[in-house]
Length: 358
Image: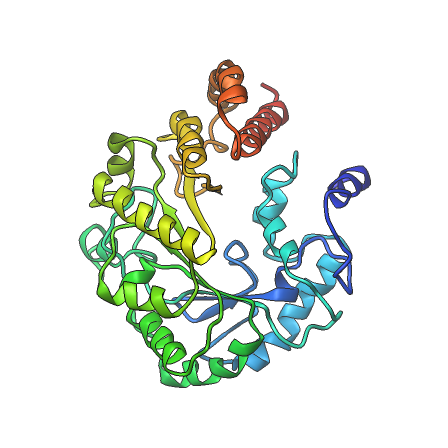
């Protein structure tokens, strides 16, 4: 990253509530627990875990040497070990940069006493077989496609007991999967929160297939935000990518979550994994989200091979760019809330084409 690029990026950020300036605030604000026991600072940094719940307590992880390595690197405005995804994503442009989301949290101390965000992806329980997914994140794929035994359940009572003292300090709990609304461990946590009257803001990224009285009970007692993963604007594309999902069911449940979020003044969004199989519907998906007055959460797919658009040869990526350039006048006038997202990704594609020499 050039000094000029860094300066331009920082001009778009607010540091007034930060005790330290950093390229990214994930290790200052966040812990991400995943289903093998590893604990990262975000969902993108897999190569440099901050610890493992099988060997470390949460205290040891939050105060440990490995997370300090990341804090020190990012406070020096350098990407730390394991930050390759964001380094790749921001090489040509900071538009739609994933690391921006951690700017939303204040950082009152250079050495933070408590995390403010905890993200959980501690089980692969899921009823879908999305084409870009694998058994690590879907129990159905693991059983049917990979023919492997179930993953062990690593997060037991001792872990949740150690977690409890952190909850009053958190601004948000985020639940991923698998499918969070099928994960027993999450209901154990939510039930205790309800019993003890603890009302930490929670956010669930769901595939939109689950809605029942147990889900309703959690929604009634805890402020819940929702992101519904769809990956297609049409029935054909959604059901081709999100195998076992039914378009009508997902849309009905998404509307329920949206109505709840509006009534409770929590967050609601639709998420989109931009891939070779669905880039052509990206504008229509943004328009759908506009009609629901909600933002789109955009995920950059790099793996597995054959799905990500940025791994295409330069001439193939140029075809996508040309097609989107032809659509730009239409989306420039049709889109409102999600116009910047669509055009930001257009510029990212353009920058990648230029970098490839096409």
